[in-house]
Length: 361
Image 1 (spheres, rainbow, N blue to C red):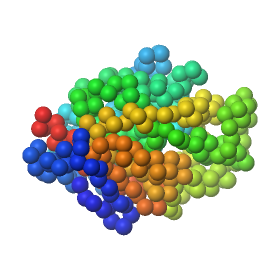
Image 2 (image 1 turned 90 degrees about the vertical axis):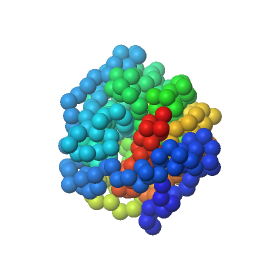
Image 3 (image 1 turned 60 degrees about the horizontal axis):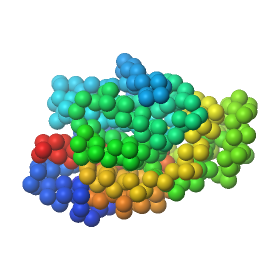
């Protein structure tokens, strides 16, 4: 794997332990031949309209009967990708108040190249509404297991952004035996396993004037009047654009990136935002991330992330043996949009390592 991705990214490798055996003993298992292989198409996402990438829907039913809206992109054998056989599946897990469309640049890059799965987490996007008591990170881990069981016949690479990364860590807590067996690679992007100030993650889902110090009781109060809150969000569209830009991105990005993200956030009812709020305040899973060291694990973040700050990613990296850490200098929480080329290049390396692991086993 490369040490630095230009001037915009700083790469850190973990100590040679656990999964680092794949890097340290790469020649023995054929890893070297796969490193730095370009898999994702470059630039395709910029030429594809946001929200236009879809496939036939598949409905995964969670253990509490919630319908999880899912789409699968099958590989195209004519594209001559090393993964076009479909032996590996990459499952993408989105973040809080977003939906599967947030993976636009990753979906465009890997479409036809790799078998990929995208789904809307419960209460988000086109998935069914969850009960309030099941709006938990623990339940999201159970949902992810159902998605894997029903969509991925073979080895799996998991890619999670923000709350999606928390879902992966929850799965690791519940089923550590899957890592190194069914699950052969993990990417944790702009996420954490605990210690999060939950108020920060509410930006920019709250109406103007509310902020990071809003406590659970205030969120509950707002929830009772969630229709008024949703109206306020719509009325404050112009201002909300500015807040979305400020809190989601680090550097300047094209205006349509901001609009795209704002539309996703605004489409999530505030009642859903409030349902999941308590889950962030109680999250404490750092003691369960070490198992991820059994597989190649990439931790990716922006150094100007105002929601899950870079310190969270550095802590994950320090707790996961052999993990890599890519810090995208100046990027914000939505690094998957803002620095999509860097993110896709890192995912290429991860997928290549997972492929080498499969071939060596």
